View 1 (tube, rainbow, N blue to C red):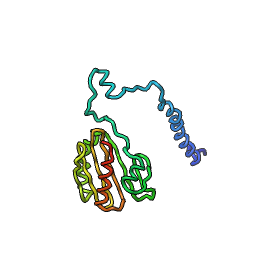
View 2 (tube, rainbow, N blue to C red):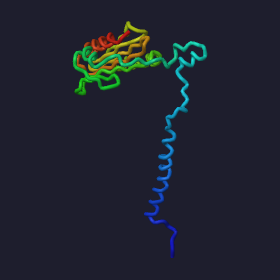
View 3 (cartoon, helix red, strand yellow):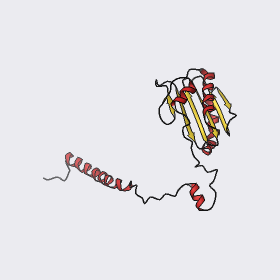
View 4 (cartoon, helix red, strand yellow):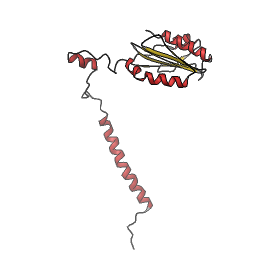
Length: 185
């Protein structure tokens, strides 16, 4: 008497075949979807669109320019008083995995949007938070092993974080102040 039941080996082959077909189609269609040909629409920047309309670019637009990293490893080494190396993306380390200094940049408008939240968080995380008398807004926050500073100036927003330089709260404050002083106005 014959049975219509599939053997385990035949069932496994059918499952693999069902999976293989969609994967094969995906592999064939993916390169077509990633075509970077010249038919891609580029609406241009907000400045060029405003100029075409005869208007002025919106000075308060969120898309204003993010400044580049303001430092080299040599400059950071001079600021902190020890040899630092560039680990990329404006992150500088001592090469031993201990001390670090990082600068995150953003547009001035982006910095203004997040400033109150950052300031509030700093008050909860650090022993000392002081307002800066430079730029549009800014603060410096420190404790024994780390610190951060946020500076919003016309060119953009700079967030500096430091860790494990071994100078305590006062030493971290000095490093942050020297770092902020070295950021071009």
